[in-house]
Length: 232
Length: 246
Image (cartoon, rainbow over all chains, first blue to last red; front, side, top):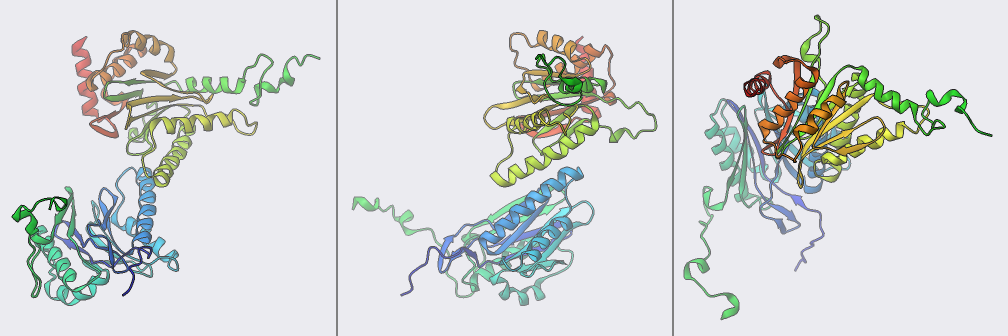
């Protein structure tokens, strides 16, 4: 039997998604951080704030993506103070891309930058492994995204409402969780528009069931009123 | 063997005079006054306020580009009195320092730490022949996690202290006299009282009633710890309250 290696680097297999809608963007992610086959954190938050109006979805190496986010947050902070107004999404995405490209030999992280600014409205930028930057109406990333390309080809529409966009993201992440072993846990979404930022959290029992999946139940111990384990 | 006058250089670079004075540092304080502005800072129970004049002598100047109030981070403000050019370079360096602090240590640079940094930098200039002191007195304000509202003042000599109320610039002594009377018995000012004490101190000391566009007011409050500059409307409200009270 394989021994679980607790010292293996933490990787977020991950499913991450960013989608634009008429008025802003919706970012979504799963919550599994794995160390080999051990789930080191089953409730991670992979959607990280860079500024009040720009967030980033992180995938790949947990450490690498955290450090890149930290540097970009630092640079954006200085930029914002100098500029005297919120940084644009494009600037944030470019800073991410420059770090990803110039350190490509030492980093293993795919990122999706999403946010809202007053000049261009809601925008999504994909920054995959090599440090490319590409603005897209929607972007998917992480190991779970492989299972979503066909789904998005069919389900994506231009000009969705906020609720449609969030439903799409929620459904897509839960589909990926169903098929990708490296994705799991809960679905977190972040909605960014002119009014601000809203964070949502969807645990397993609020997600749709696919085919052979079992419904979630609360533990029977709750229902049966079993005594404390040590009192038997 | 007495040295007498130090060769006459003790006025030109920062070395001690025979009486133990640093003339360049004293001249720096004079430079702060020469700018002609007066600034006031007041610390209340749960807020801080700083106030300074907004003199725009040239009619062709764009008023919106004239300011002595700077945010160093979202939560830390700095009011610079004295030579504006020196103030700008200090602000630039303080911004970089505070941003790096947040990045390196994972939490916001506290008010007193920033003030100490500014003061320590100023002290270095008093020991180098090649660099002159900055002609700026800085008032730093922010809300501290543990101690609540904080107001610090840093000067060209490298001193820094926390204050319940402080002043700087041309009429700083008159302002201090006014503030000492107002703050006898350690009052606990509310936000409105803090702002109005600061503004009325400036009005009394300069003996003129201001219009909202002639002063700059910066505040931090415990229930809104971001440093912000009051809008003309807000300043007007306070000015009205003051005149109605009097």
